Every structure is written in C-alpha cells, then in structure tokens.
Image (cartoon, rainbow, N blue to C red):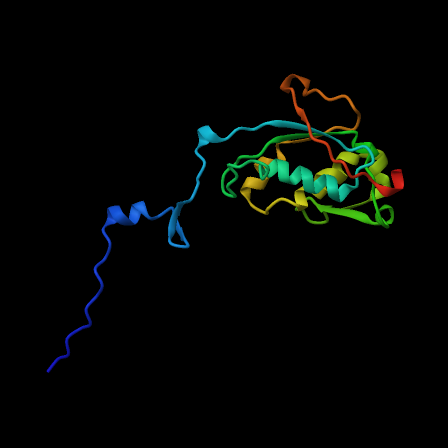
Length: 179
C-alpha cells in the first residue's frame, strides 16, 4: 500500500507574483522598491576646489557625487551619477608620510609595473594622484568605468567646462597643516 504524497500549498498565480516582486514588507506594511527609470536620471555638474583639502576627504566626497548618492533617487545598479570637476589639483594636501610612499599601476603587459612617488607626481602629474584615490573608492564593476568618465581633474583654476554651469561643492574641512 502506497502512502499518499503530502499536500502542497497552492502556488500563487503568475500575476500575483509579478505584483509582489518589488514589494518589501516592513512591520506589516508593504513598501514598493524604487527603481529609477532612464528618464528620471539626471547628471548634474559640480565643481570642487582642491586647495588645501586632504586627499582622502576630497576623494570620498567626489566618489559620493560620482555615484549619485547625494540624490533621493539613488539606486546602486542605476547610473545616477554626476559630473565632478576638481580644480587646483596641484594644491592638494597630503597627510602623514605619503610623500615618501609610491603609487603603483600596471599596464597589463609583461613587465608593465609602473612605480612613481607621490612627491614626483605632485609636481609632474597631480591629476593621477586624485584619480587613483577616487577610483579606489568606487565599486569594482562596469558602472565604475562610466562614473570615472564623469570625473574631470584640472591642475589650475581655469577649466573648459564653464558652459555647463557647474554648482560649487564646498568641502569645509581643510588640512590642519595649511592653517
């Protein structure tokens, strides 16, 4: 004599499953998950003056703006980032013993390891210091490449993006050594 298989609970209909796909239930209240549409996404322009600002503070704020985390419509999978212009890159403040440290990069080819000291780079190519610091603070995925394309680092105070009418983003806390 065979035993009867256990009864299964009725499966929800496909329509009902589609309705609850983006719904989260919190404390008995259902909340829809917000997913921005491409028409909802805007890419604003911001300008940051790097004069006497510590590298880490500047990089953290720029990464937030590049990802779009300052917007109420932020979603980690959507490209809601802003354009960020950083001026006066040669006047950045480096703390600690960074002048004695080196920045490494690799071309991907055999023997392609490149090593430059921060003291050299601050004179020759300060844009590379800021770009590398911000790149390290972005997620490691395909979206980061798009967001890094919206970063514009300029050595002096003049920049060619005045036609975009960027908003000034002020970083109030400057380096203690600069005071």
